Amino acid sequence: MLSLATANVARGLLLVCLLLTGTPAAAGGPPIVAAASDLQFALTEAAEQFQQETGHALRLNFGSSGNFRRQIAQGAPFELYLSADERYVQALYKEGHTQDEGVIYAIGRLVWLQRAGRGDLPSADAPLAGVEAALEAQASGTTERIALANPEHAPYGVAAQQALEHAGLWQQTEALRVLGENVSQAAQFALSDDARGGLVAYSLALAPALSERSEYILIPEGWHSSLRQRMVLTNQAGEVASNFYHWLQQDEGQSILRRYGFSVE
Image (cartoon, rainbow, N blue to C red; front, side):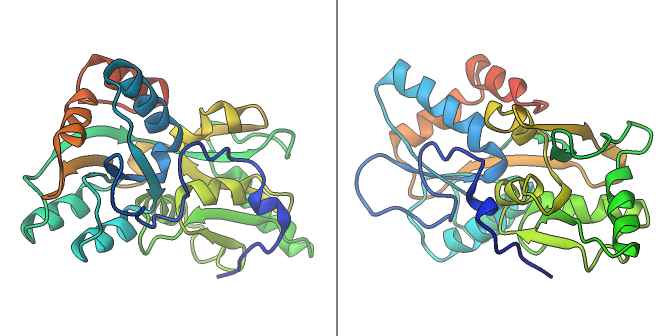
């Protein structure tokens, strides 16, 4: 796969709390939360509101669900894990790293995202028309990248691959695809100057930091596996992490998730 080695990659998303690297913070201080990067804006808002109500701060790490699953299995000091794929949580529970199987906190959606004014926005009837336009440009000698998260460890990358396969566009786009380490980075790539667009999380497309300079179209849910997002307390969880876990399941937490396009059960 190709990568975007331009300064545009770093432009765009406002990182609010911590890094998107998924590297655990140093021991001590507020409880550390590992969260899928599609939650970057929604969970930051939720954590801020939780702190206002309780006085307790949280340290949020955003990254790919698969990388966090590996780190937790290796003993990383995360107290709460919010995955974009419930299977990672279920695997950790079977291995004895979590208190229980956790709960489904949201159902995510996939969108085609592109810079505002970057050609015609695809219609609901042909949501991957931007991908087809990039292929046509390639045939004419112009390269327009297609961004997605790495399917090897990012659930939204898996969904993006499935959507492209559904449309019969996966193999043809190999030379055009650029992979983000997580879906948040993929969104940055999608809005860079040399990209046609990308397949990313609906929750990111709705965030003001992106929506002011982009446009999107939802991908039909039947084109990919359901993005059932599960969270769980690890065996290291303390009282504050437990309280936040339960707070997210209440009306205030759920209303924030809904505003960012998540369905809640």
